Length: 63
Image: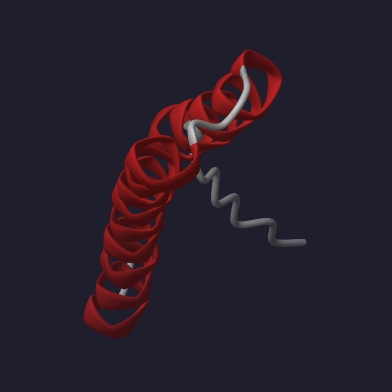
């Protein structure tokens, strides 16, 4: 894999982790400010968890 592609994949992974953290922080803030319900808390936690566990698969195909 070329360095540029490796860097793009690493950047994508980092953005995913930052987004997951931001979603968790947002859910915590909402709960402190407005006391969000359990369903919304679960949806936000599930979204953050999915982002953290998601894997990017890159395949190279040649003839």
